[in-house]
Structures are given as C-alpha cells and as structure tokens.
Length: 134
Image 1 (cartoon, rainbow, N blue to C red):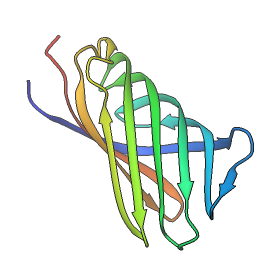
Image 2 (cartoon, helix red, strand yellow; image 1 turned 90 degrees about the horizontal axis):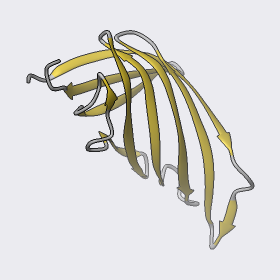
Image 3 (cartoon, rainbow, N blue to C red; image 1 turned 180 degrees about the vertical axis):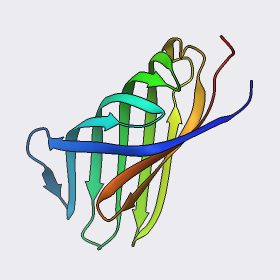
Image 4 (tube, rainbow, N blue to C red; image 1 turned 90 degrees about the vertical axis):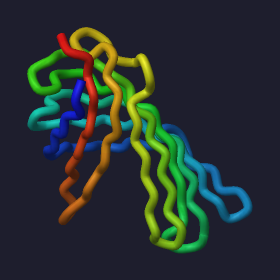
C-alpha cells in the first residue's frame, strides 16, 4: 500500500437548517452540506455542519461529518470524512480526516486526509489517501 494523491475542483452549497442561535455574543448554527467533486475524485458529498462564530472578527469554529460517494481513481464506493476547523483572528486550522473503517465497496479500508483551498471563490480539494490493493 502506498500513499496516493489526487486533487481537483469541487462545488459546494451550504444551507442553514433552522435559525441560528445567538447567546452571549456567540452565534451557533447547523447547516446541510452538498458538494460535487470533480476530477480523480468524482462524486457527491453530503453532510451536516455545526458552527460557532464569535464577535471577534476572524474567530470561529466548525465541525462536520460528510459522506463522499462516487469514484476515486476509477474505484467506486463511499467513505466518511470528519471536519474540524477553527479560525483564531484569521489564523486558520483545518483537519479533514477519513473516519476509520467507513469505506464501502471498492473503497473499503481507505484512510487519509483532505485539504481544501479556496482561490477567487473557487473551491479545490487535495486528498492524500491509502487504499488496500484490490
């Protein structure tokens, strides 16, 4: 098993679920995530995100669970990724990790980490993963 690397663009729609709650200056909310991945990862991502925004500009946090279904370099199946992100006055930290043993079909046994890049309002993924040989 060797580490593989794929990258490409994705489209994302985030839809608020219910009204955000503001308490002591912190706004919390829940959103539905709908993504379409393109390139060597071709498929759909569906998930749910919880977020918290503070009154300090650039300070916030979010967690999300997203199920990705499609093909990865020609192998079909699904897997789940867990997002954990924080911004501390603009300094960003983001971890997107494959949930262990969440792979199905030809993606069973997958592990890895994803990164997201945003350039001129366009979203891009980079995904480093390990998959047992077929």
